[in-house]
Length: 177
Image 1: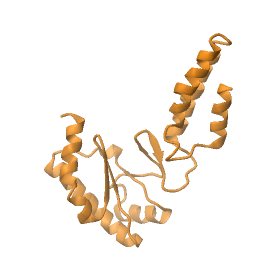
Image 2: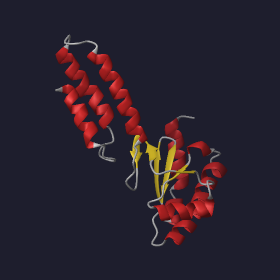
Image 3: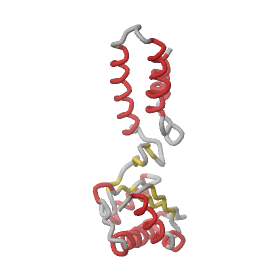
Image 4: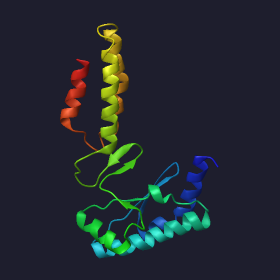
């Protein structure tokens, strides 16, 4: 089945669940993100359990779409929320993480030390930079175009969602000039 058809089916089945469980749903192709906000942590923990059970039933029960357990993640807005969710559900809802990868961007609800997606892109940027440097002064104008049109946008993608380290941005800019 085509991925857009899967998204349409998911949307149709999950549309009624969102208001019922007061949750936000985001679907991108065949990936699903569920978000909840409550006034107390205990209310949140309880509602996360009922909402995820309803989503699981809708996907696996009604649509026969298996949930990839290895890709399931839980991202809490604070350490207190993370601890309560771990205590209540263990890893049954998914792996507990500090940053979640979505659409190739690191998403974090609080400050984290590492951004794995950016770090991978930075490493690729450094490798490409070495390759271009081997050209020396040949094609200097073309080199600048490659940096500005391809390499810089590739490492800065998602900067509006998760700010990249200023030192790395400066290093990348210095590469061109």
